[in-house]
Image: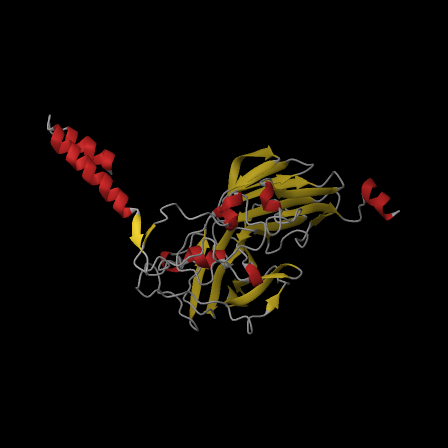
Length: 398
């Protein structure tokens, strides 16, 4: 401040005495501001240093344990503001079930030619690996929500019931829905209140790999688990022997299994706070492998439902990338690593002609840990051939 005053007054001309007085006053003001009265009337120096970083920020690579809830999860009134702030609700542990199994695909009921699906947004405690669950909000009691698989031009109806303690909506990411079905609260619809329902109706188009997620308080609700895959098959798509969806996500799991978004009044996190990473809701070694048979033609659809980019790398075979964000590529290309940004989708295919167990994983290697320290974990599974053991596995068995 003293420097700023000196530079400003110096432009007034040669009034050196006036400048000197202002500089002295400014220096005294800074010194006085560095002292404060204690409750007992004595003086003490005020600590003007920035707060020390929490464990996750100090390491720069994650907490190395379940994240401390006091680290980076302060409400906006922690600094002493007296205004009341609505604290978001926490999952009721006594009533929310602990679940580890999911229904991969949801089958529709066909009514007058319309494919009708039902989704319930609800609280759940979801297991990443056995014994490690996190409080979450999911669809139909699972993380991620069930996959929709329909054919291009199908008429689709989705009956959504909100069993959460807060309002919500659903956005159909990448699908050409009518505007009133877009799921943006206050713009295309009222939010679905707790206990309420909403019916989404649209024609399934175009073909490709898409997904659905909450668009109400979306930074929180998406990170709490409200997402799922939506695949629209095209009439001119090649025939595949095996198809897999790999939905990627990251999580902040607090001690005792609480979610990092519970009780938080602001919508910001340090990326280092994410300490669990999942494929289809599971962390390695609980992630399901992509099991193929020799000779299979295989398509893999990667969806990034999280906030961080993930360079996904396949060992062994090169991937032939055939689609981006649901759109077929006019010129498919080969790669062994594909960087999938937040909200993006990449489809790749390969022919299973090299038997083995081939790792598929994120190449940000912090993302292949559990709780930021246990490796291997996180975003990892394998393309594994049915009935195949490699030489190392045979030696281990024998």
